[in-house]
Length: 337
Image 1 (cartoon, one colour):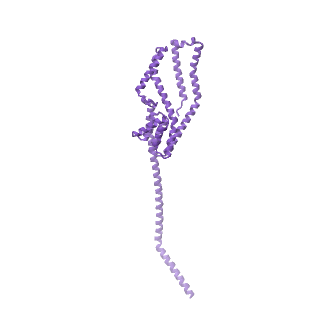
Image 2 (cartoon, one colour; image 1 turned 120 degrees about the vertical axis):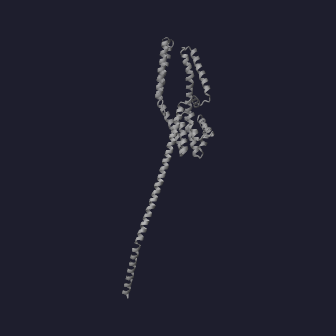
Image 3 (tube, helix red, strand yellow; image 1 turned 120 degrees about the horizontal axis):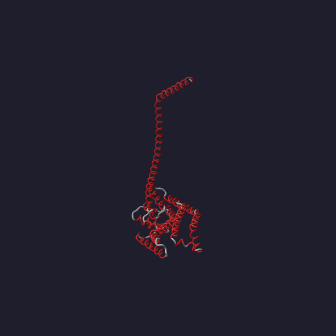
């Protein structure tokens, strides 16, 4: 009985194994195809993921290239405009020079002042006993020399005052932008609270905006009335930020830092060249001091320089060569920063 049960179990087990083998034989192709389909689906998904990653990377690169090209085009356009404006700023017409000096007068009044100045110099030279050929020279110096030299001095003094105050004005704009105010409010604050001539220049910017100009266009026009590179830098920063975007407070903060570094470098160069300037002043003053001392001790010895034609010629040649020497020393001591 026990042997019969064992035989029956063995037959059943073998029948099950045979049925399983037959089923596996029939299902082998289906299972293999499902595995292949699964692997193919996984490969497709992985390839799709890689394709999306590559596409996203390509899109980021294209966006960065487009942004870089936009900035480069903006810089080229601004550089071309700035070159034209620099040419007009370095050699502006007389009306522009008067405006850059901070004077509010028509050109006709300046011509009248120049003629009056020339007549005054000619009359003083005539009554001082100068030779007749020196009177027209004094007239020309009074008409074309002294007024324009005074105008250049006023322009230089105004630019120095502007550079002293501009970094502080930029810091105020940076703080206002960081606090959440729009940049127009910061510009209006400078136009009403800053010191001259910064206040006047920013007031022109505000007035230009009221006439319909945008803030970048109004700031780029600042270089026309303030002949210094720093005014152009401010306009370029605003123009680039408006076209390409970015952190305006950081850009203006960097500009303020650059302006302070330029000011510090300019002061350092001035200190280093002070010895050469003192030497130039001493050398330039020596002929006049020696001539005055000789006149005090031996007036008859030096008077032929002022009373004879040969002395006049010697004085003229001496003044010419001294002027050349002063011009050369000035060029050697002055540096553009």
